[in-house]
Image 1 (cartoon, rainbow, N blue to C red):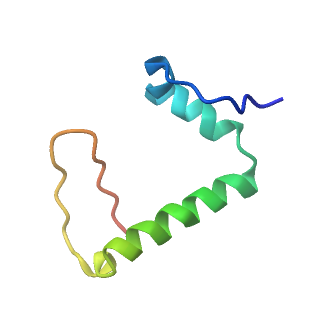
Image 2 (cartoon, helix red, strand yellow):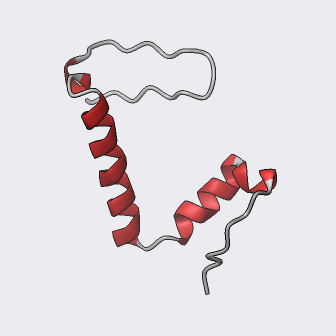
Amino acid sequence: MKNKAISHDFQEETIEAKARWFQSLSLHERMDMLCFFTDLILSKNPNIMEQKDAKPIAGRVRVLSKT
């Protein structure tokens, strides 16, 4: 059974906790989340796919490139 309670514990904000949460989702739920995030990004920046040679910046941002 999945824990559907709201937590305010910072331990649940670790990358490991987030990975466990994502892995607990079904494949369908994971794909829905990925589509949601893609739609969100495209709604905020429709030209993002046209940007070339993105450079990583310091911090928690990961740059993905389309090959």
